[in-house]
Image (cartoon, rainbow, N blue to C red; front, side, top):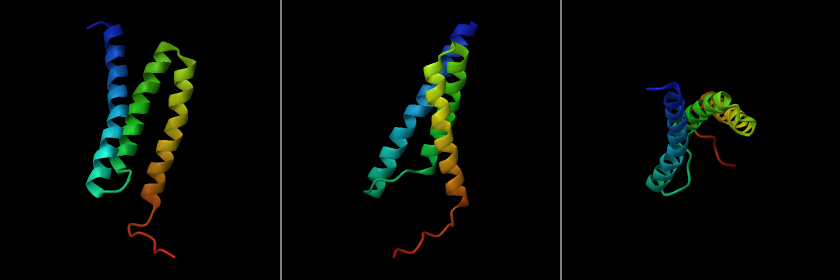
Length: 93
């Protein structure tokens, strides 16, 4: 396999992970009968975004690099907030 094909495989894998997060969110929401965002959504977002960022750096695409790097802050912040939050849901006012 050539290096070009390996890079293309990495890009497609990143895009697959990034796209799969919407399927995960949709299925979880359907199961709960309400809109929810499962933990896996954030991990797939982070993994897909990281692979796409690596791919975009290799391709030297500044628009793609900026877009993927900005999103990673959101995904990491949400994972941090989830880890930091208490395990019991807060009481409603």
